[in-house]
Image (cartoon, rainbow, N blue to C red; front, top):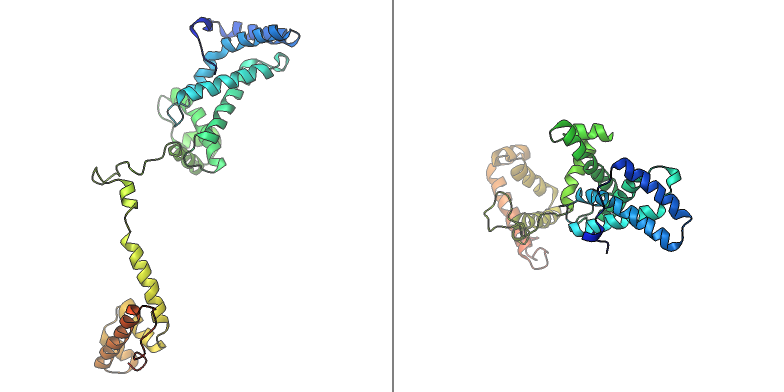
Length: 274
């Protein structure tokens, strides 16, 4: 584990001086002995520990322990130092890119309690990166439109990714549910049987029972219970009396009830004669 001890505090160094010293140390390390190379690398790490910790702090409070994030950032700094080449450019941008990449991968692998699509994950990290800068520049919380313009994304995609932050620490099933009594939790609600399930089951059973009725009886049920026709209106369509429709409805409903009450769902033997 990499820690910052009191005896190894990085001294306050001007950024330009730090860049010059870092480049010199990297060049020295290329042709140095193993022990000298380690000394150069340790010095570079100490010069940039505050950078690693600053980048790690941007991800605090998002479901992963801050100490773990600090350690990931420091290890990424060590990795950047061991791979850096002073002849290819300044060390600082390379270190920032390496540390951010490691932190993001750590969140990708360990931070999501509910894992959204990769596209949403990556955009969510981009939003985090620019959020602080935009807030400071504008003096207010950046809107979805501003974020979308800055990231060259559609507002719909930015809004979707912004909501993905809750995937790091989703609401507990035992947390109080908004709008309900304090003692009523989401887990308690989900644990109960929704009365709608019973209605769906009954509707399915009834539909199967009605499918075996003669077409005339199906039409009578449709007109009465789905189109809300009166018995007289149904009688007029069939060219019979209202009393005949009343008796037909009674017969049809009695037969359906008998079938639904039967253990195996089959009509009783005397129903055919009804």
